Image (cartoon, rainbow over all chains, first blue to last red; front, side, top):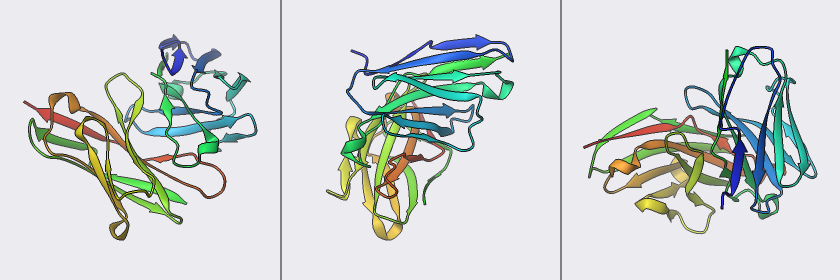
Length: 115
Length: 115
């Protein structure tokens, strides 16, 4: 069984469009994350979210917004897509209550290409 | 504040040779340290982690890392490289300060294994 899944795996779209990426985890974790990995493999945290708190990386444009219908899902909505948004987006999850040493479990990634 | 520096964006070894990937950290409080591996077109997965129980940590696939507080290092080693070890490796640090356990990742080291 897939622990953290993302859909779609590939997303190609035009500039200015609005798109969403879905993430689901079946690990019973209470915290989920979105990361952006650029073409040089640099991994940047975008959001951390649990049912208590949303932590936003202040460098993330407000065109990006996480939406969590329940603890097992954290979707990423992106408005007015720009060329610079092209990247691989990873969802991850962990168990906050276990503390700072808890492992993050990553999804397979969504490769977004903005034309 | 916490940070991680991975020396060398690319490391090239011959099959059967020693693998050494370097990671130095900075943290104002005792850190938790992780090594993750990313195979091509996949998400990150945990190789090993240091949680203060033992300074020499053994992980999957024959990898190990040693925590050296005096050197603020957590280098990853494997005695004999295998072709299947070719991947991107990320060092990460978290700490238990501020109530937020978001890891800080290094910029990654690409391991290339030659036959």
